[in-house]
Amino acid sequence: FGPRQRGRKRPVWYNKTIASGMKESSDARREFMETVGLSDIWLLGTVIFFSVLGNVYRVRRHSEFWFGVFLFCCSFCVYLVLKHREDQRKPKPEEPEKSEKPEKPERRKQATGPDSG
Picture (cartoon, rainbow, N blue to C red):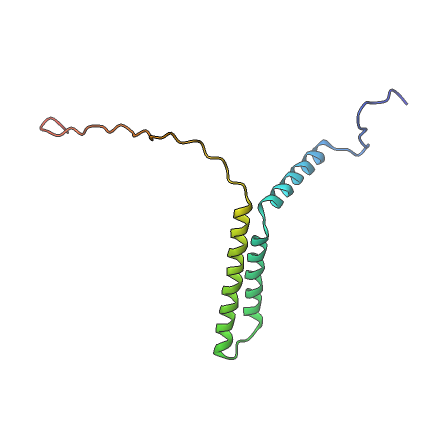
């Protein structure tokens, strides 16, 4: 059988290309889960719901239309609240300390007179 290898033994069907592809997809999934929040899912669901509702439901009275507009505005306000809460929970990136006096760029003196330009 031969000498035993140290570390993890890889299966016979192990493929480096597939393993690297699986690692990349795992990283992409992790990044997706970090960036997508409840507010994004809510907004997507709202848009899909009202798009389908607009194509399926036949509005019979004028008041039904305005009630639909009211519901859409309410669901959008819920999205704004969710987004604000998510933004508050995110840690703010540290900004570099600013010096007390910002440096002003030097201005070039414009030549005015008979010899300029």
